[in-house]
Length: 284
Ligand code: MN
Image 1 (tube, helix red, strand yellow):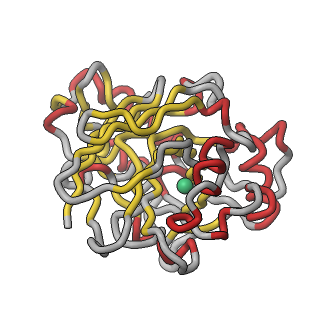
Image 2: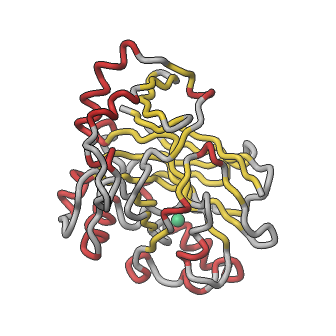
């Protein structure tokens, strides 16, 4: 099932290039309390909400996907986790251009550890990318996004996929330069997730998905998630040894080779096999 937030924060299920408005299913959510628990309320109660949504589908108001404004399918993650230098060919391109990528790319993902992006950077593709520093290099990084569905702490690799709610397209935008990675990757709109989440039951093997990004119609990034240095299970297990993962947490699983600069006026087209596609406008 493909689930989404759309337009003025309606809750939808995507079927056959149409979005069905099943917002009434949100009445099955527990009332929010303050201070709120860590994590995303919808993802923490996904099974309940989907059970309430299914009977609504037959009578739901529908809109074509092309006419819908999509927001991040995880509305309130407790954190957005990034996996650096996780495709060998991206490691090689970064090491070959230290002027742009700096020396911090030396060493593999295990040496570097995971990083975090500010939650305030999170948007769906309808927001577009806003370039903050037009005189510096801002790059696209096309990635498979993993959305956590259950509280996960110290989980074993063999159990790790049991903690996944679903998969999505993620863009880990970054300003190149000398500052700390989390700073340069946390500008508003720099954590883009969407257009929807495909529930985990529909993705048999997240470590074998074709992934691509085009800029103005020209393919720039093209790979398969099988080329990751550490796979999805390892990422979840490793992350959960350092901190608890909460429902709604997003893991941006690393970019393949072909990262490059974007400028105002560009349109990005992103695709991941069995998930879908999304277009992203670039603004200043
Ligand atoms: Mn990245």
